[in-house]
Image (tube, rainbow, N blue to C red; front, side):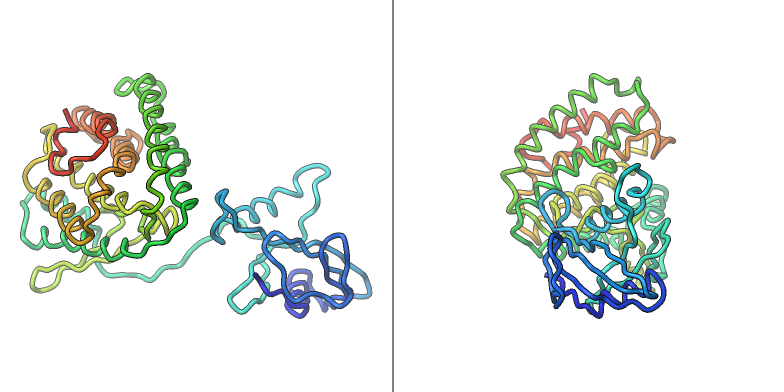
Length: 364
């Protein structure tokens, strides 16, 4: 419940409309309580009447109810409010929006004026992108500090993933978004050239149909919902090297919600290790990047004991595989590298349980 006080509404209207505003009545739509109300629930529109400069105004103030249809979090509901505010007045006969705002932690209604883009300001961190270390490993070879960093990734993810919640609808939404969202599998597929000789429409259609089977399979794993990063790859990790040679790291750009499937975070970094390994020219994972890949998986599995993750990780690999195989995102791949990655995304869906120790099995 959000507490809605008369003085908060008066302050908001004064800031949004300008001048001094006195609220004379507030109540549910369909009635008007001259005494006002103190709180209301999400989705309950409130009718407000006020006086300003000797004139009477009236409007409906609404908050959206959190629900299972993609509106669980306040940032979901903010997206809807922004859309309705921006586009409502453009349509003939549509109600005219008078203002938009947010409720802060103290219950104050804060107006948002003339917004066109939203932004975020983050702290500036020291360090360099982790992918540069992977480039170094390609040229100079692997060190024990590199392996220890991969193991530390596994330990860090295990700590993050230890936070769980029992909300089946969120897990189902997470899987639905993984397959159908614009930034996820179907969206990435639509970003490929059409038709694409290296992976013609028949293969894409077969892949998408197979993913529907996995969507229904994963409905039986809603108990796995955990806190996740959502986009844990080498371009979203900053590393610093201490005098001892040991690495410290920080992460950037958390994405796609707080809650999800923990195996997806492991798959994201693991598949990027495989990518750098394939860049060596052979269509198999071996050497330094195989060691890094195995170090991450083994550490995470040891810390979590979560062998069940191997039963659900395949479609998360498909998403990341399609990204790193994309000619738009990675235009400089050789045909051999791209073909190996695309074979992987097909083959990984055919095993009910991923064999992390035999990655090359999925490249054949």
